[in-house]
Image 1 (cartoon, rainbow, N blue to C red):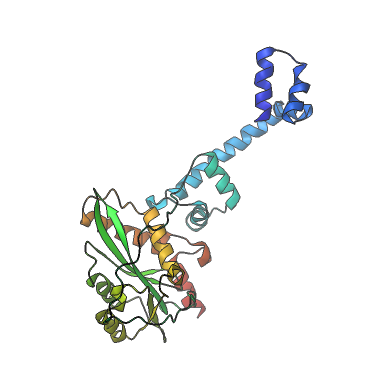
Image 2 (cartoon, rainbow, N blue to C red):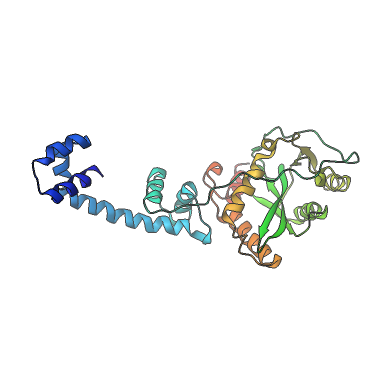
Length: 300
């Protein structure tokens, strides 16, 4: 602060005539300098600081809600949804910066796609064409597989099926192997999820990974009465919401501290419950995925 710098120099040399000279150098007015140190201004700053500390407590309550760290927009929606407090987004960001409250920043996925499809496998056309939000729960199902590194250099894999309209995770599977059954078991869990109703024209969309081009997987999809769609080759934007979910998941889940596969599965189960029920999302009218699913069903 320029005023504080000026004051420290003046107190050091005890020369009042230096005020004008130093104010000119710093580009501030003399009246502004004296006003900054007036009793009224000091009391006002104390009141602001007191208010900021109170707001900080509420922000930290939202930041640590369900023991899952959040960014500014998540904090705003959690404050409203869980504590009925409406804070301006700019104020939240200012206080987070002031009190060093930081959320993890997602890094780009360094891993390439899995093995190329063989001649026996079938690549299907892109029926979705990035029309992710169709306001019909269960109509667009997005699926993919990602790596999970945990413990001391251990690796597992997570397969999920996500509702494109509501962002709800409808089925998931954690395995220490990346064989075909990680995808087929996820599909079976989707079928056994009694809360999922497939409207007419429902289909599942994926990349061109060998799990999804496999004849067995494709037969299961048809057996369950679903259509199937695939992203264009090497185009991650064709399945962007699913990729985005994996990024947020790795930021917010406590994966590395897990020592065993059983611990990892418990943590994944915990965050999936949190994500579907308590993680408010800006683009879902500030609702959680399940709240937004019920909203769409009530509107229909």
